[in-house]
Amino acid sequence: MTTDTITIRVDLRAAQLFKAAPPAQQQKLTLLLNQWLIEALDTSETLEELMERVSRTAQAKGMTPEVLQDILDAPDA
Image: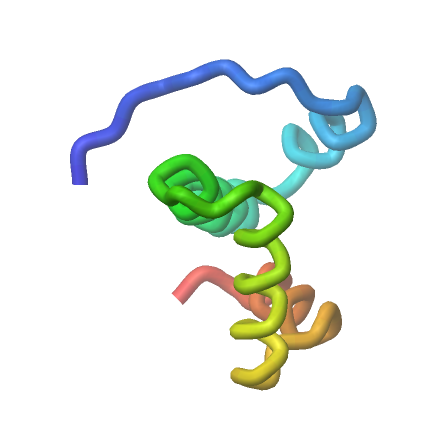
């Protein structure tokens, strides 16, 4: 996969937490954000429609806030 760097303005606390996170967690969050940006921008759906669809799909597959946190907290494989 070819990558490029972009700058996104985030809340100061979000930036501090990301910078303080271990590299493996930063990588996982980067992959998650990358996928979310692709889905959000490469569609004819509104952002609200997209968020609702993604949420329904994730919940149908068993995703909960706790499961997501477990995935993010898992050691790098």
